[in-house]
Image (cartoon, rainbow over all chains, first blue to last red; front, side):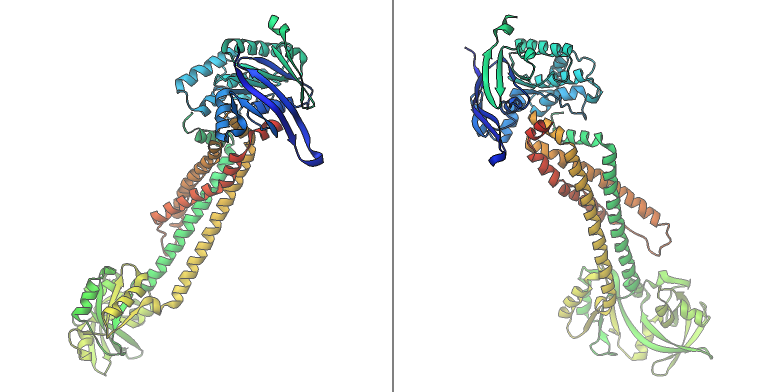
Length: 236
Length: 382
């Protein structure tokens, strides 16, 4: 039986107060197992990014709780949350968010630099491995600003993999890519998931993309309206 | 890179905006240079003024309670002076004063005589080194006259002059040398003679003097020294230069106060400059800080980025400021001013330290802002 990686229990998120209050999430509950490959789908403004930020320990729910490997995020102090984000979670944002002051290698290695537990040789080896996995060999010394959109997104993915996280969260990771690059990225995610056992949660509004995951969580108006196992994807 | 990550990120952020970094470093450098230059200028100017005023004059003087009476240079007094470490070595001179009148047939002038041993007089007046013509000698009939007096009466070394001394007796002296003590009044009205001249004139014993003059290592300790000596040597009057030069002291204090005000405003300007630059930098780098925090950078390490920036900016700026200050001081040496600026190393180091300190204080706002930044603010707002 697969082990639970995280549990989202009755998550509510309200922005503002009184009549102007906006409910971004309403009673969302689900569980994600270790190594699971899931998509969160929904229209723009449906609350899927809010949900992703919450399970990524970046945001806190107004009500309900997120338990990551059994630990209630609400009860953890900020330094511990920061440590968990560094060690257990990798993020791929829609706008890649690379650090323009640093080289490609430094961007990829940054999570390990922040973690501070790996030896320099180990960091070097892991960063090179991640770069090779994403076909970025030879770009190590380049500045992040010198890359194409597709290359930047791949660097962001390599960075997310650097600390070998238990969960990789990707928010519209192919939103700015063409069809060919979109396919490449998803194939890559699949490959990484299979090879490393990393769980994936991918936010997308593209149903075609979501169909290629094992599980689809659909969010509408802040509610989880569907949670379906996608046997088609597993079969193919 | 894991080690000192905050420092390395700070350095990289600074390098990514070289013009901005250079401008603020220049601002700090100019501020610290002005601080050092103005501070040293005022200090040296005050030192020069004090030196001109009292450098060749007694700073503490023992004299009789009644004007005109002799003061006894007693073993007790000698002991008190000799055992006080505040007294400048070799700067104790018991002297006798007498008045005289010089007439050359058509013109006349009063001349105050200061009688003493040349070696001891040198300790107060530095006479020997200030003789500009002739020789510094005070044998029995020698007299050293000031350059203004000599010019007025066209005297040269070797000339004989007859003086009418107080009481009406006359004595003839040989001009051994002509001095310039830097004061026209002194040069015109004072002269040095052998100590026995006034003694025999006044009929005093060997240990009786008009005054015992002393210079101190630190002239501004004169008030305390005088207070101590009044207690230790009763029955005599102890006067000190500060009590007699109140106007000068007020001027010096005013000058000092204005210097402090200038320096304070310079520091405030530096602080505002650094604070605004770091605040802008913190806003400019909000996205990067948010991403780093999303990747697990702790609040403390994120905050230290701007603390390090302040240390780097303050350190480099202050160092450049010290260099610039010495360059300005070097330039000032060609200005033709009557005094030279001698910057004190302690003041220079203090100024540089203050520069770094101000930079650190200026980083409080961006450091706190960065420390408190929630990564979700950046992620949500793109």
